[in-house]
Length: 448
Image (tube, rainbow, N blue to C red):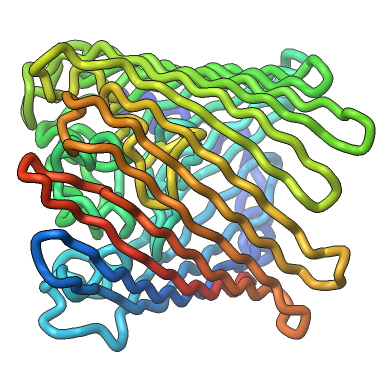
């Protein structure tokens, strides 16, 4: 029924838009379209430090990106499509040895793959816009999470409106999900579910679009219905409220407030965020563990300032606790669709959504633009005070790292990026076996 209604809406929009001069106008619409894209090279190496064995390391290299075509706008109507690809090179063999070849840059069995990731229709009329089909989404709890080679992609139908002054209203429905390459770092379970990916097995769910319920809990559902309101009518203040109803799985409410204020030569900023989740319908999260019951909340605050080219902030968060002896999803924040808006997340460590976690993050960024170079560097440190019933690790964890971004003047549109993270006690077993690592990433992005 929902698909028939959506098809009827698209046909109606086309009839209103194209009219009797369809052939001539459609010809110009396509001939005046534009190509864009990105070429990406990504290399990663992680050296493990395990208390129970000798250190080992894994690495991977890939090149790929996307090529996108968008038609010109004709009376509000436009079409778009994008082809994505990732291709490994200089990787160890056998590639399926994930202790040697990092799985986050490639597809199933660490093979190269390509996907028609975007195919959509977009229609704009006055202050209303509709976009339907395969597309990127960048919302708090469902997002592209473009952290490796290919992003997460969605089959979605989204309507937005700005008729009310300083207010944006959004309503939509997501039916399918195509996991990007980053999700392959997880092989299912509670860590995956609270870090942005499927608790079923994110390592093998890559390469195509599938029903979002099948991806999440191994059983087809009616998808995710979402709605939001964003208000910017007060100077310096932005308020947003989102609701995600994942049919027969959970309902997630996300709220965020951001306030900026100039103080002499500095700009101070304060942000707060809140997430509330409850199981709904058949509570199908029980398919992968626990009894399917979820009643969790998370809150965080971030305070910082920007003075000339230096900005810095401190953030703190808490997630609700499980009952004694309960290590299930009950009080964790489940976020299986790439959404990772937490103020206290690390580059890799995302323990802040595990039940009972108290997290702190310090970060500072300096922009060297006044020295005549397009160069920016960020340093950060995160710590995670873990509750014993968090369901994953038996001790506290921490992570520090840096992120350097450089745009060389000699090659326009090229970004050179070096990132590193140093995770300490990322996982500690019941037998006190610890897993930590040092990780480095080298990334080239050329946009055209």
